[in-house]
Amino acid sequence: MAMPIYAKLRAGVVTTSAAQTQALAAELAAALPDDAILALHGDLGVGKTTFTQGLARAFGIETPVTSPTFNLYTTYLGKNGRTVVHLDAYRIENERQFDDLMIEDFLSKPYCLVVEWPEKIATWLPARTLHLTLSIESPGQHRVVLT
Image 1: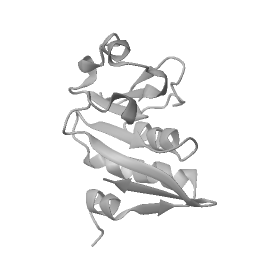
Image 2 (image 1 turned 60 degrees about the vertical axis):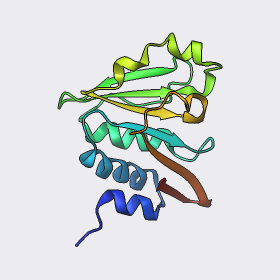
Image 3 (image 1 turned 120 degrees about the horizontal axis):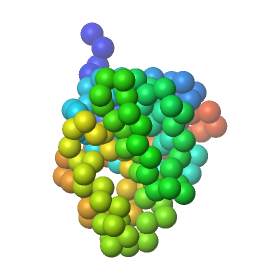
């Protein structure tokens, strides 16, 4: 019997390609509640946007998912009614700037909020947020861990 996705992620999963990272995200997507909040921790280039792409594809989103660094967040409507809100908090400088975005509207279904650079808004994230740490283990090997 295969290990459930949450247990697998707590143990840590190593992927060796973008496709594997996306497949892992799709597996998680199938187990997420409709109002999930994911905090993706990790340095530049560890696969946060790649992970989000897999999640979005699993929700039936065909629009290309790219990093929303310059517009702060992008919404993607899925075919199954679920919507991914991809937030990049990297450029957020203070809580007031974040409050002005009115992101609280995205904390209930049908929204799945995915936050890159969540440490910038750590005090704002609800306790139910799932924290995933992405890292590079060695060239060509990335690790995803649910913390």
